[in-house]
Every structure is written in C-alpha cells, then in structure tokens.
Length: 161
Image (cartoon, rainbow, N blue to C red):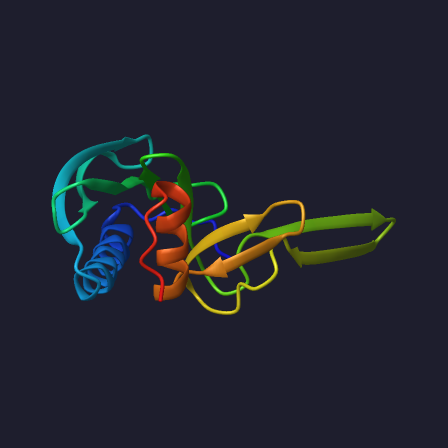
C-alpha cells in the first residue's frame, strides 16, 4: 500500500461518490429514502474542502443512519467514512489490495531482512471495508448484504432478506 499523499482529495471524493451512489441504489431498492447533504472537511494535507454525506430514513421518514465522510488522509487507508445509526456506529475504510501492512526490517551487519505482513485478512481487492474484529484481524469488503447487516447493527432496523 502506498503512503504517498496526493495534492488534492479528488480521488477520495470520487471513491466517496461511488460509495454513496452504491448505497443509494441498495437503499432505494429496499424502499428506503436517501438524501445527500454537504459537509466541509478540513485536513492538514488538503485544507478545507467540500464533501457529501448521505442520510438514510424509512419510507415513512424515520431516521435510520447517516454516512459521514471523515477524510482522505487516514493512517493506513485511502479514506474513511462513518456509518452512524440510532444506536451504534460502524467505521468503513478504503483500502488497496492487501490493506495496511506491518513492515519490519532487521539489519545484521550488511545483511538486511525485511518483511511485509498484512494486518487484516480478507482484503483481496481494493474497496471499502469494515473491520469485524481487530483481535482476529478480520475485515470484510462492503457489499449489499454487509451493508444491510451494518444497518441492523447501527440502527436495529432489519431489511435483510
């Protein structure tokens, strides 16, 4: 995973927009309402810049949760959003293939031995991930099923089926 920071958050904003579009599609197909909203992020690497979040509600207008953009300059990730519901929160991070790595090097004289070990299992492709367990080093790529599992977790609203 590269740690170089771009001069602009444009790549993050595009991936964020793609994520919100996908969540909007999944939600609409299940009869949920979604509404985009604007937020201003302020990061040391980029300064202040506008981003969009997404509010989710039932067809009757009862609030369920909010996708809140956090930023592009996240240690070990290309970006982060928080999924806040009425009872809990889930953190989603944007990773390259393999996710964050634990890197070590040991020098003995002129001999250098370096190792790179993924921190989380299951990061087989680039995308948005939810970390199920830090203790077990398990991460899951966000898909429709996981999204509705997370909706149940953060809001106690069950649309799975």
